[in-house]
Amino acid sequence: MAVRAIRGATRLTADDPVEMSEAVVELVTAMLERNDVDRADLISALFTATPDLVSMFPAAAARGLGLGDVPLICAQEIDVAGALTRVVRVMAHVETTRQRAEMVHVYLRGAEVLRQDLAQ
Image 1 (cartoon, helix red, strand yellow):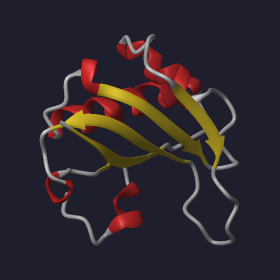
Image 2 (tube, helix red, strand yellow):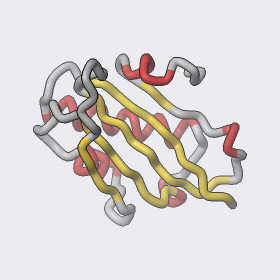
Image 3 (cartoon, one colour):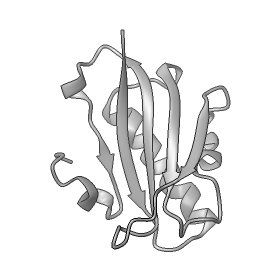
C-alpha cells in the first residue's frame, strides 16, 4: 500500500455551526467513498477554513464520522484579497493501492471553482 493525499473543499452559505458540521461530514464522506477508502485507512487530515469561518472547528465536525482515533488538525487559510469566502479545505492522507493519478479530489457546494482543472 502507498500513502496518498486526497484534496477537497466545500463552501458554506453562512458561518453557522450546523451548516459547518453538515458540509464537512458530506465532504469527508464523499472523499472517502469516491476513493474507495475505508475509515481504517485514513491516516490524518488537515483542515483549513477561511478567516470568515469561526463558529466551529472543521475537525470537530469530522469527529462526528467516528474518527476519534485519527489525527485531525485545523488551521486558518491565508487571507488573500479576492479569494473565495466561507471555504473549508481538507487534505487527507490515506493508505491505498491506487496510483496518485487515480485519486479523486472532491469539491462541493460551489468550491468547484477553486480547481476547475480537476474533473468532478
